[in-house]
Image 1 (tube, rainbow, N blue to C red):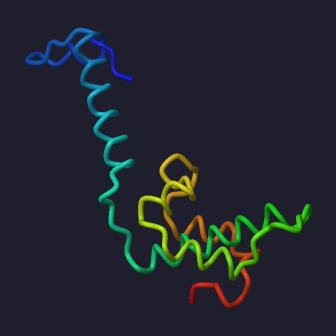
Image 2: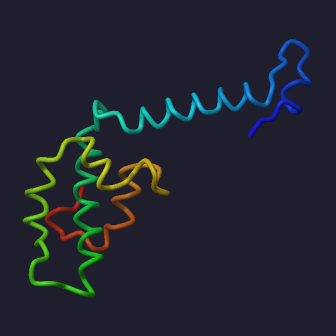
Length: 120
């Protein structure tokens, strides 16, 4: 993070640490609002990547310790296709995850995605 001592060497720009902190906080708040915005529109391809990736993630989590009430991939797909873009982003936790894109999320879980749900 910038401090006043690193910024103030510019002759026309003199900010205090408090001012810089306010600027930083405002930018962070704007970024978080953008990431949590329910009006975010995914492309159809990104929706496919997230739905398939979530199915793969679920299959990965269940494959070693299956339970009788675990959803099948078909059941989970029928639920996920009705999710809004915001719900898909929330479930995949894409904004806070190390994944840079829906495709990267999909690629990470692709080994566990049944063939009929893979994105070509």
